[in-house]
Length: 275
Image (cartoon, rainbow, N blue to C red; front, side, top):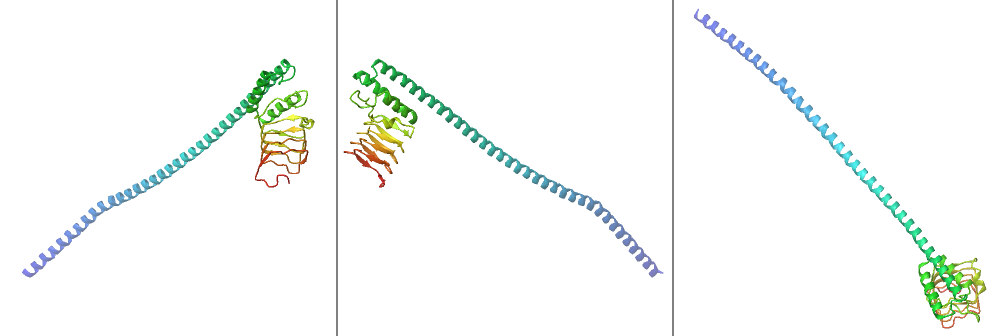
C-alpha cells in the first residue's frame, strides 16, 4: 500500500513536472513569438529604411551630378557665348575703326588736294616758283603721304605729276618730295601716266611696291631707298638709279635700256635679281 502510494505520488510529480514544462515551453514559445515577430518587422523596417536611404542617396548623387554637369554645361555655354559676343564686339570695333580710319584718310586727301590746288592757283601753277610756296607744298605733301594708304598715295603722285609738279624739264623744276614715304603703292597697266616719263622720285622712300608689267620711261630714282620693290616683267627706259640703295629688288624678266646704276648699292639675298 505504501509502495503504491509512493508510486502514485511520483507519477503525480511527473505529471505536474510535465505540465509545468509544457506550460513553460508554451509560455516561452508565446514569449518568443511575441518577441520574434516585432523583431522581424523591426529588421524588415530597418532594411527597408536602409534601402530607402540608399536609394535616396543614389538619387541625391545622381541629382547632384546632373546639377553639376548642368552647371558645367551652362558655364561652358556662357563662356562660349561671352567669347562669341567678345569676338563680335571686336569685329564691330575693328570695322568701325577701319571706317573711321578710311574716313580720316579720305578727309586728309581731299583737304590736301584743295590746299595744293589753291597754292597752284596762287603761284601761277608752279609750286616751286618761290621758296616759301615750295616749302609749304613740300611740308604738306610729306605730311599727308605719311598718313595715307597706298591707293591714295598713288593718287597724290599722279595728281602732282599731271599738274607738272614732279617733272624736271627746262620749263619747270620738280617739287622736292625726297624722304617721302611711298609705301604699298602698286602701279599696274592703268598707270599710263608713267609711260609719259620725265617724273622725278629722287630721294623717296619706296617700300613694298610693284611696277609689274608696265613701262617706265625717263624716271629719276636717284638717291632713293627702295625696299622690296617688284620690277618684274617691266620695261624700263632711261631710268636713273644713281646713288640709290636697292634692297630686295626683283628685276626678273625685266627689259632695261639706258638704265643707270652709278654708285647704286644692292643689298639682297636674292641671287636671281636679274634672272
